[in-house]
Length: 276
Image (cartoon, rainbow, N blue to C red; front, top):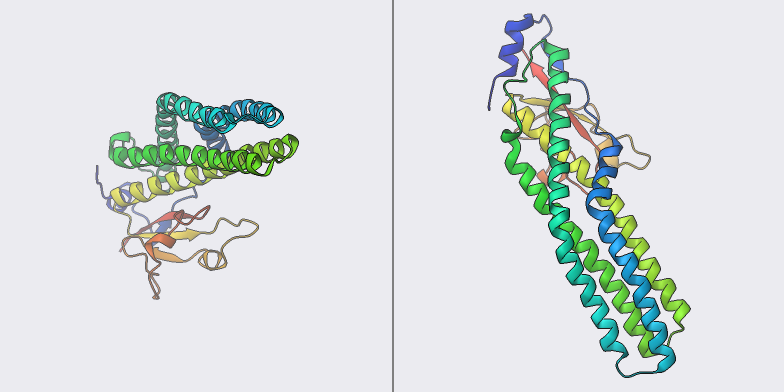
């Protein structure tokens, strides 16, 4: 539901200042942990179990020198694929619950920031239905990412196994490579969960600002240890939300380099109300 927040703020407080900047909304890391545990950890656990079975089968096949070894190992990989498909039904429900929870948290923080800055309570003006499409898109995105994490782990394990059979690589070396593949999948999934939280909250903030009639936002750097230099340089700069151009003049920020959109970007925007 679209509404004119600057107009509501003028009526509520008749502000003397020409502009008001709302407080920062920073998503807590626990929400990223919740996503990992709900949606990604079960996939890593699946491959951890299958890895031990594959290691045992590889060791047996290598010692027996059987011609059926590739078939037996391929069967285990296919079994993992089948189990993942069944698991995705449960994971989709868990991811949906997570997106709904993040939306509720973000909406509550947005309402609080508006109330603190303007004295306007917008609780009756905003709801989850306003951002349903965004939530659906992120649900699909995470489903795709889960499949990709699984596929990449499977490929690494498969490569280690079949290269090992060809080269008669000792079982202990192949086992080490397989377990490392699972560990790499775990690390990647952890990073993805953190990135997805930032991306979803950034997208929700963008939508809430637009529906409130906000025309300007302030860029807030993530202040990470190793930020993108050009992102850090934008800290505190005021941009027009619609065009992503600096209010004081300059080139527009490319859409794919806007807040939260590049991989692992932790920057945010603060809504700025202007009273002309």
